[in-house]
Length: 190
Image (cartoon, rainbow, N blue to C red):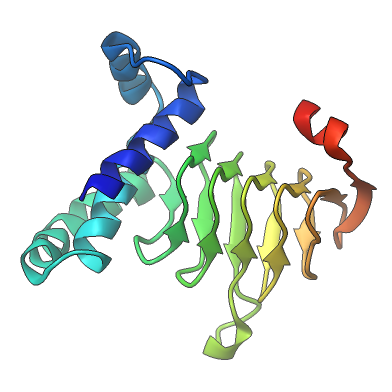
């Protein structure tokens, strides 16, 4: 259970930009003001209850799931199932985000909705996207199919990604193409 609180703490640090001491008033302000932080807290607990705990907590998670679904889907317009594996340091900037259930994302994921990570079709063999660490996906982007996004990749606004994206680059366009490979200096500025 402690890893849930660690994940929430890392998510919170992404919202505040703080890397030192915790200010309880700032924590509460961030928690009550940001729908992305609300989603993060609910997602972390629901994922723990349903998929990472014992049977009693799984039962509690099943009882809480309708509330989770109503809040995240209808109120926040974020369609990310607790089945999706997302690393720590999640930052959700806007609404209208949809993930397929088998998607996987690494640490320090930044989502600027609306955006979609999904399958190519209805069949189960189409696969789901897999995102590395420190990936940023901008508004309107679509990542479709069994696509791998490398570490520290940036998916441009309205890009449609249907092929793998290597690490340390920026992609944009329809279909998405590499527009720039980043060196160490550029990565720290972007």
